[in-house]
Image (cartoon, rainbow, N blue to C red; front, side, top):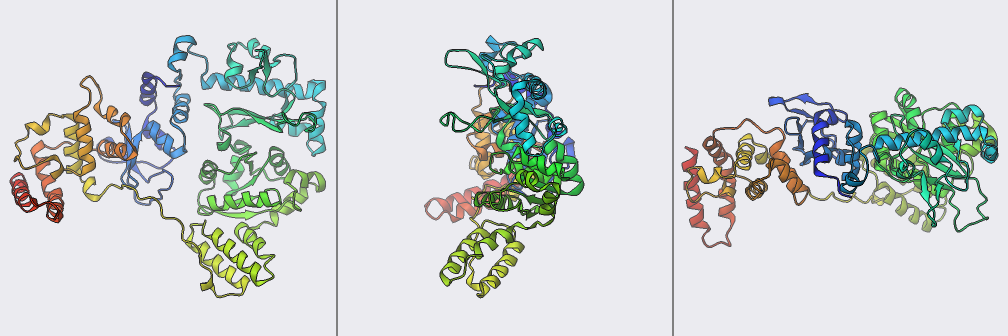
Length: 580
């Protein structure tokens, strides 16, 4: 559903772009009230600051990777969010309610907000935490945890609960008693309607874990079925999680991160496991620096969360199930994280075992021993490929697979050293191993040195602000806009000239109607860190000196145009006149 324009404008006004950006990179003052720093956007690692933020205009632009936009665009890029997700996250931070046009007409101003969703989730977590100790029907839930070595103290520590069953919703009455609107449980995904319209609790009959964001705020619930899978196999779902919402995305959540954060930062190490009980087991064994991916693949968002806590040269200990699927998933973490951390592998027992089972069978010390016995993950995974290479044919297959896996890495030192190691293990010359080169990144339209010049951006910005300025300048007839400005800036000026006259902010219109990312970047390159305005003819003169030679060279090189010789002479004369 569409978010109203006035809501977006309210969020842009309240969310100061310099404060949001400062959470991701260190900003220092630049000239004329702007700020600059190293670009925090994904896939752009720079040491010389080329990222500018203009609090006055509310935009940013990186002159290194040529990306820019407003505060919403920034959050989209840096957190890899959709537009709506970025808006909802900002709205929560600045206390703005997001209502669609339909919701504005039919719902009160408090319904459906992130604050209300969180309130409903908190109440549900409290109700379920009480039920696991007070409800006789929760006996199977307590037995499940006891068999895995967890006590009442562990249950309280992790806020574990049990969702009672009922002929209709049990939770709805609790939400109403606490003063929440009737639809709060539905909006939070806690209550659904059956085919006959009867409400029922989403997590009824399940063991419940509260899911929290890195700041410790509840964002969702996870529920494990305690039923026999064979009783109704067509409808059996082992785990059910909260739906994606303004608060929660399963693929972005690391279970236990809020609790583990102090230990991760202190030790510069994190242990990554797969399930909720695995996190509990490793923490109970004395390693609080543990998080879980919990039923989803390890994502780029997970990697960014960990990199911020570990800094550079930290350690990620992967402790996945000791089967083929677990080892494959472990390799993906090495690929995603090897540039900022040492990735090691801790094997929790024999194939098919996991940290929770290891602790239940052999105690806390067995978990600690497994962590202490960790080895470099890349070597362990590649070593598994070579373990069966006892014939030339198998060795050739292992070599191909291993070199292909090395091709997924981007650290040159790791690739070189492991290639040598592989060659030694296989007993062949290193040159026989051909590591595939990583695919070339798509070409990007980076800002050229000419486009960064103050006079170029100054003239273009003035022409955007005043579309009639070009016609009022006393210029030789031979000169065209493209003779003084690069093509991308010409396109911005030309778009500004056709903006509706009633538009109050032409720059905002240019950003919102940009046809693609490159067009939007051209706008922000002019808007972020713009220089002081020169007298227009002075700006024209400086542009002629700076950009004129490139235009003359382009005209001279256009041999397909029979009039290029005459055009060259006219252009040279025209540029010469405005340079004086």
